[in-house]
Every structure is written in structure tokens, then in C-alpha cells.
Amino acid sequence: MVYCEMGMKNWKKEIAKFDKIIRNNNIIYNHK
Image (cartoon, rainbow, N blue to C red; front, side):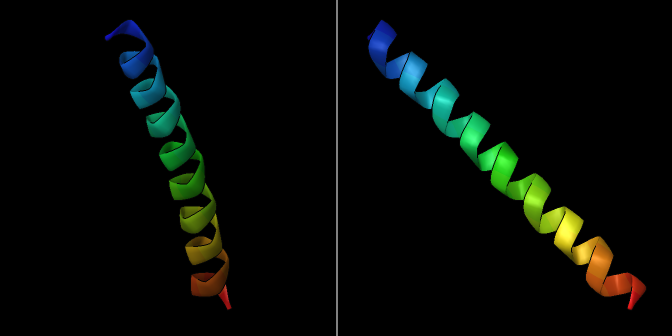
């Protein structure tokens, strides 16, 4: 159970990282 929760936290962190990259790319594209 604890291990599963840790996996979820890491998964959310990876999603947040990926989301940040997408947002940064969108900002770059919008400025062009």
C-alpha cells in the first residue's frame, strides 16, 4: 500500500514535469 502511494506520487511528479515542458513549449510557440 505504501509502495503504491509512493509510485503514485512519483507518477504525479513526472506528469507535472511533462506538463511544465508542454506549457513552456506552448508559450514559445505563442510568441512566434
